[in-house]
Image 1 (cartoon, rainbow, N blue to C red):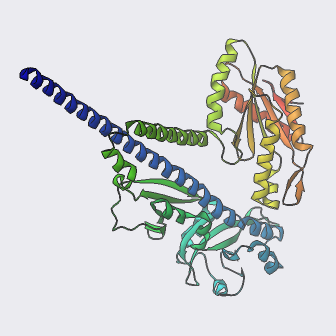
Image 2: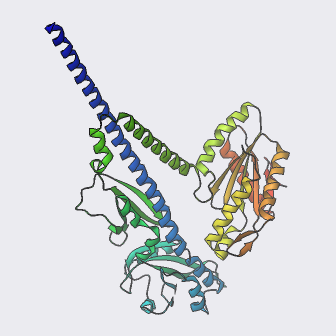
Image 3: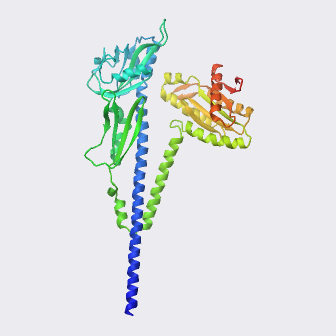
Length: 465
């Protein structure tokens, strides 16, 4: 009897130990998986934040510095002379983060607005001198494009960002002659306030925005809340392209796994396994949501929301193979907005962006659900159409042309008319790249024949319709 009791006790003890070990192993496994998932979630959260801040920084600085185009337009229209510089410049420097705007014939500053607050020190400034920030001016002249300089210390003794844009004019003897530089200077770090980088402080992140200074070839920290005395586990760093400049945003997660209360609870809560499983499922659901968001961002154009070029090529290639098996015809249509650069130069990039967005809305409402529509680049779009013939595609494109040109585009009480030129090409032998080239040639035939029309490519020529 005693032996039986001893045996039962041993069995109970073994079962208890095994249950304890099983529970401990299960809780430990759940805890480890949860911690890993949280770290993955935090990394995805950091990547999402970095992407958002990267786009925001680029948009804020680019929007201000592209005002140099207005200055350049004034110089070109005046054939190198601006008679009422102060009045014209005041309309450009209408934002408090703009320190000044200036023009520099032959790279020597002749006019600056406003001519106060130390800005008068810029008069006579030579962009070819050995001063900090002038390497960007030389780069602008060499490339013929807008170049971002800074942050660097200006002649006023304050830190600024500056956009340098070379200007070329036509003279009686020669066309496209280098005239000089125009520039917009931005207050730093005030220009970054709207990027809301400091919000990272409230989300347990440390950050560092930096670049390689072209004057010293050394790392220059642009803005940071990073404390080197604090221990940092890991970080995520992303490239921040701002016009021509290469900036980098590095973000650290300051909280450790043991700083999360739920992780401590998991270590001791062997009786709450069901709740822990639910927590993991919710955490995994968040991870899937974040991945879906990032995947959508990789597929779509950030401005218009339609597909980008890379995803368009992936989708159409599979559809072409299917249509070819069914002996169906497929078409590529390329179109762009006529004289779109004039819209940007005249009304600004906000108007240009609104035109692009509204164009996509009109096109999407006039195509079939299975047609593939994407932004090809700039003001150029591309369309893939199947299950139709030559007559059907021509009728479709005529509808698209009319939906663009028959209704004006409006923004900020400004109303303008826009037209588009279309090129159509049939896809032969599943060769989409060749079809794109043909459609592009047909589009330029439409443009050369007066714009606001479409042309169809043939082996002999792109026949206008």
